[in-house]
Image 1: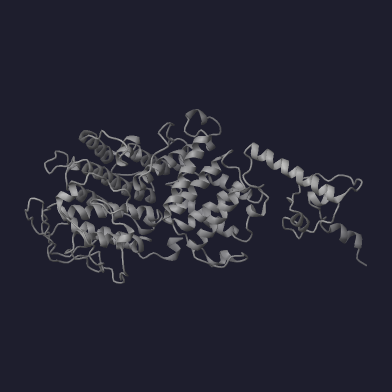
Image 2: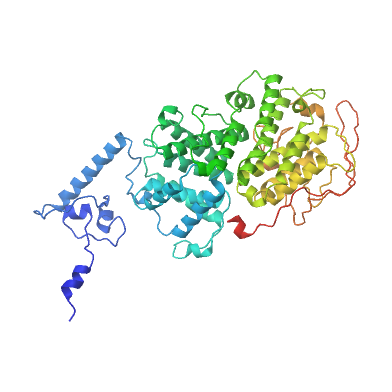
Length: 582
């Protein structure tokens, strides 16, 4: 006969929750919280009390009143000390959603981050991330960090998942973008139960940064700006802008320092794209190559990125946003020289870092040139080439040359932010081509070829074909209606388009957004109307085509820009497989 006593002793002992134990009633729990008794009595279901010996029974109704009053006082105290917002973390509204993430998903996202994103965003430590994953079940902030990281990986690089990763989950197999949305909402909801504002941590700052990156790629710019400002504010609350706060753990200090400088760079780039003010300044020391000999290459590329954006301080952003005066030709020339000297001819960096560095450099040169023209400082007789009307042609040439060195996966990692920079450069080149004469010999590459190759890049990069290519075609049609664009269907001309130099150079203002329509900006989304057919794309080659004359304000007609030989692209964009995207 089986021993019943041994089988019963092997069964787990069921424990009543604190409220049911206090009321001396049977705890009706099926393993989820709250139990049925607490739910019906509107009590918080916890298991914090230490089991004690049984005592005399009392009035259950009186006990419920006492429990409610005790919990009410606890919540008042929590509010007073900033420990909570609306209700305690165990509230059903803040409970983690089960069956939304698998270990395989988390592992895939973490591996992808360290393989592809980490070089440009070296803010996480692999071992500590593993420890954070192990705390997800008991620490809501750790849970929010991991979930936001996974959502970020689904959205920016559009990392692909094996359908097997969805096995055993409560959510169906879906695209990376759809899952990214789900994870964003989950992290934002659960985070409401965390006191991250009054007591922020590095986890808090990184989570807000991942929110920003995700919403930026989703083109929800108000939400993106909110979370970027949230991240910089939390960093300042923690004193990350003060050098005296970097004297504890070497590993922790190193990654906190990198996090601050990443926010520094991101805020400056976003300030130029969306005309926002700055909050962070260069008030702490830079990371050093000696921090980790195994990461010398990654840290070298990261330091180049910081130095590239350092000159774009409150002075430049103030002039850019028209909140400051005092711009001079000498200062702009010096800034252009700084940008030209910022990067060596050979970069000690990873390929993904090189993509970001080279493209950002040419984009920043374009932004400085736009500020120069908005103040009327450009001249056809300028001693410095950077202060001439034709400088964007040189920028486009350099950008196309650099782009030919990179693989498409290395460019795709940067998401829509990279496409927007290419788009801004292409739009500026389009305006210059419509206004400034350029002599081109028969067999040499010229502005039209650079524009064609920029169109090819934008078309082939994820997100560019749908969002930015129609805008660029609309821009070309507006400023140069007679210019052929092989392989592309152009939208109808936009009323009011102009390519006159007087209208271009007399407009002393910088475009308010990278997607606003201005003489040197990009056309707005509203400029696109109708459906476009881009099924046949052959922009890598351009055959001889009719000239497109442009009239100067003086009435002088300049020569035709004719390409009589086929134009071969200086780079090859390989077909991207699902595995490469992942």
